[in-house]
Length: 341
Image (spheres, rainbow, N blue to C red):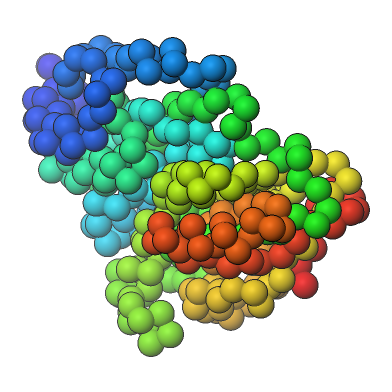
């Protein structure tokens, strides 16, 4: 008896590391110390010493049950982008610059080529966010998970000047809400998605005229990464007073998280185009509108609060950065919360 006969293939682990190295190297920043494969990732804080009052920000997340679609379609090259996005968007939401990222893959069986495709997506997400992929772990769990399945989670650390953090504490009545569009469902609410649609290869490969793509292609579209978009607004001199990453819990849970007491957000539902996937999902599942806005991003991946005088300039800055953005509402005096009208 040996470890391989027990279900853990050490040689496959070595091959996985070799295959992923080419992707990981692309994400390196000058601050990264050492090579790939050490016991820990090292990142120099030399540049941070020049900051007046640096604050470290961290985020950890996965991509939920969206990963089940990747299993069904045997498509594993984009799930890593989702994982990175869910972490770095939260750090950017607080005004931080993501510095580095680590991933964790638990699998029933280590298939090196599949692991490399997953990490390729992680690396692409890191490149888009400007974060270095400095480490990770691939754990083979025989008997704990089916051989063809895996789970993916990640962790990121970022930094911000304390004076430049986005806290929401200065949001006031009269401020304007700017929404940045999402790329679709992103990585939340898939437990409900999987109840609405048949989770079969045939169903996911069905082409929908209104989507302009197959259902699977639409649902597996990676979560948008907003790091550079938020940075572009900051570089114009506009102060982002509050920022909400619209994830699980939709509008009703996430928008109030950026608001101070005594301020209520009002979002105008017809102020931006809602992607067709949400209408299809609502019809097919007979889902109440309130539940849709309480579960999904409904087409807005981020909502920013800015001074009324900065709203148009913020939209233009986001558009110049390649994002679609709209003025979607306002802040009013009232109980902390959100109204949709």
